[in-house]
Image (cartoon, rainbow, N blue to C red; front, side, top):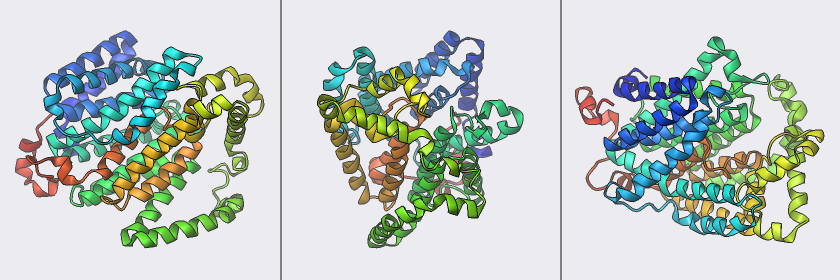
Length: 453
């Protein structure tokens, strides 16, 4: 961590200034961030641009009113990133193939905008969704080309620093990091922290596999310790299961794809037996209270949300086929808030597939799934973690709708992972820049090669 802070001290200070400006006034913070982004581009600091964007998305998920500016500035930030991408093509003179499998879905999203009860919101959300898939993988690849594997290390260390801050605030400012008795870290809610932890862990494992000498043993201990603390303290059953799924299946697929396939078959056969007896198992392990075993049957109100969504979909053929446009799920649950609250549910649909179905119909859901599976199957030839990642994401998306939203800190992390595991290292680095790791750089030369930001 000391190495990371020394190498990126000025950038970290800039991020602290962003936060501090939010405590002054929201308009001031918006102006400071926008100006900072432009200055970063003038210096062609692409790694810092993309890390700064994720930082803003994390702040936008917060419940603290001092950080409300992040919700306003994230749209401006994405527009600026897109403008840099389109008008400075010499910096992005490589193929961005990540968006291709999702182009049919994005086009369909624009078509069904006209069915939305809030067309302007639907259009803007569809546009941001498309820009996310077009721009983010390109910036990820560009950052790697500029700094090599050091970019991945810096990003993972930055995320680890955020986890450390969250844990430290348990003592320093507990009201900031707890929601209804559950730990949420610097994110807005415990389930969000859980999703972010899962994706950060997947990215770290995939990076470690791709560049085995990138981290020291002590660095890995520190990284995984704070990830584990965040996952456990969040109390999210979904998080713990996703981590278990990813790590276990990664072990099997590392040995052989056949071993992995057999493990999936066995897991599918045992799933119903284990799930039906899960409250008893948790009670025996002494985890019933911590993991809220009493809410397993109704999924903490999710069953109400799911049945409501299905009832709406099945009662309207046009909605079934074409959906109601991006953000229709949010609109639907908002106007039915009172009724759903009386039934024991607060919030949205809590299921990515039902959210996609409500917003873009069965056609849009099918197009998104085709894009997702095409990307994963492309990654299979590059990384044996592709299928384990897919299983974990599929499970997580069953209980949360984070893959339906564009400007959240989870979807962008997912695109980072997908870009990493679908791209050969040589393609990342290009012809001019070897895929170096810190282990291959003498200590005396590292700062010169990576720069002091």
